Length: 70
Image (cartoon, rainbow, N blue to C red; front, top):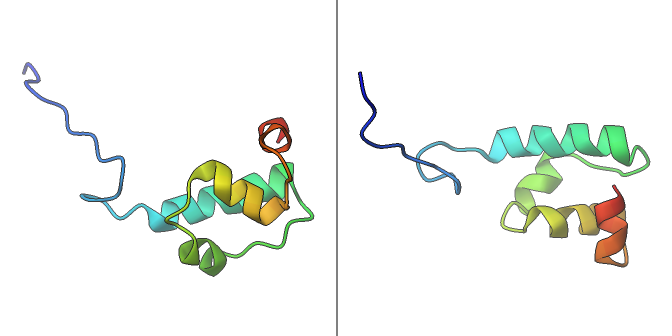
């Protein structure tokens, strides 16, 4: 069977990705910033933010370079 189309759901319209993203950040902080106090409910309150802004918020990074180092 030949594919005629591919649908990308990058903003959670078709599939609710909030929980999966919350788990991702939980694992990310555990590995790269273990001193960060993080919970899934805190992420859900901020799921409208970009990945970079979420990392900056929780790590208290003062620059984009600090975020990139993580």
